[in-house]
Image (cartoon, rainbow, N blue to C red; front, side, top):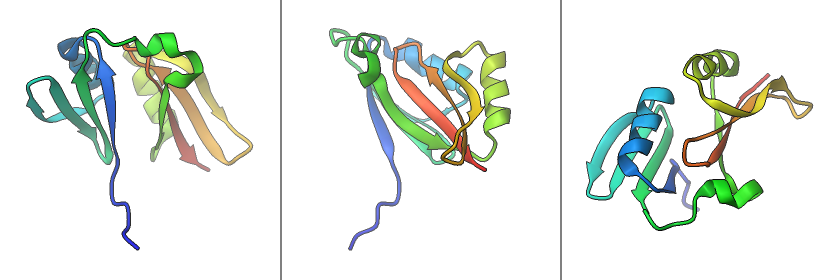
Length: 120
């Protein structure tokens, strides 16, 4: 059976330049490369492709369907503090959960929601 070796989330965004700036300057991702209409970004093994879709429905309009990923991290407390210092919008504060994760959730400027967690 073939192993899955990596994941790159594909996200529709309304303003590619604005979203790319948010993911790089606020969330700390780096630009791997760009092509017209797309930005390929990463931070460690977390990878996203942002595709500009100016006429698409905003993820903020999707409510609970705007969740798109759960990212395992080495230090959830440090990442939470980093994001708080940069003014990230949290949809869930940092908390220890009964399923063995210290986790928190954010909402991006496009309305996508992401969970970040660390096993304890």
